[in-house]
Image (cartoon, rainbow, N blue to C red; front, top):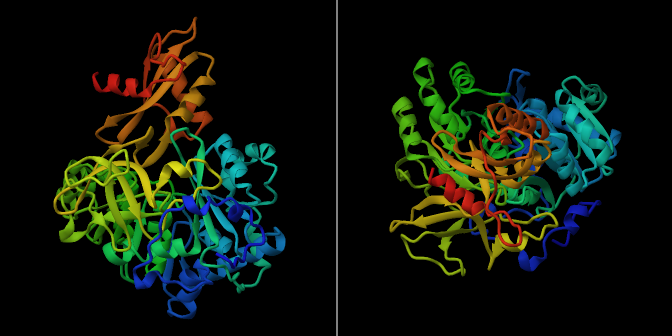
Length: 538
């Protein structure tokens, strides 16, 4: 890590101490990258200049289609705007805020080309959540879809680091791009320069920034898709995960680009809309969460999705019943996988004849995994314990003491409980922390509690995840009303709407139970484990 192209070293200076890094494994020959490497050069420029894919379609979208050459030129012009008009210097953090679209994809590549660090955010995030991300990463610049500018504008007064903002699809970015050349000289970044900071909520609800290098971006392209998914140049990817999710960034953009395939980028999908898109565009590979597969299974007979060949599920545990429903409806066996924002993408999976019902799969080539007890000792097959993972990617939090809790003895501990069977298949059991995973979204219970406590009717509250057959888990709130407020259906609706306005709407409590008091320790700490025990007994 001696060489860096980053002039702004804010993120680099806030990497964890080296003794808190996980052990990295680069055993596969395809993971041995040159010391100087820019992931945009590898994935986009070389697609045109070396692989001859310039006239192939790269992105299909209602907003318009882009060939590889057109995507390259668009990203080059945006990079020109970032450097010449907005003053980006290598190492600056650039907020990206937009739905899945050609411009969102081009902006991501533009940031890489200019040597910046992409900080992509979910379209549903509210001003308070954006403020947390911007201030934590000291974001310098922002590229934003014009329709989503409102919450960013609300956040700006509390974000002194944020300078210039440019908007696409109704803003000024396209006009600025028109004045820039179609070529751009990419910054010669190091393979160990930071390419992106992906934020994930922890059990405290405070965002954790996970920092990933240019080599990490390439590693996820050269592991799961190469060994397990095995796409081809004539594939068309589609699905629901936003590019702001690392699951979506890989599955909806990076993986197709690595193999000369195309991606279909759509906004605000419903199960019906995704099935129709597969039918109309003849998509061949689908990425989405188990909830969507379950909902689509009952509708699939009404659509011609015979083009579909492979389906990938991640973001939450895949129920056996959902996998079977989808197989009965389509004849396709879902490729399950577990990944983590901290490791960037999928590291345990199985496809084809290697799929075993009830199991996530085995560590994919490039990764190793094991199950440990609470003292860090490896457990034999059949024993439930904490999942530990090593590979070419791993956890490096942005200036966060929680690094020491995630990495032990070189292993990444993901917060999942697993057991391994006698044949080496990993079987998911549960989360080991307070994270609620609902329909593929990670939701920190304390963040929802904080939003509820801002309502005048709430005296105390506790939030947990409870099992749900369709969404995996749903958010449940236990609320102690203030005197003078009635715990009835009207208050339930009012609290739900309040949370939707305060934070991202998908985090609202679908279940609300009123209590006279909440279980606490002698020192006043909320005992969420008791709430979970009580919920199971109901």
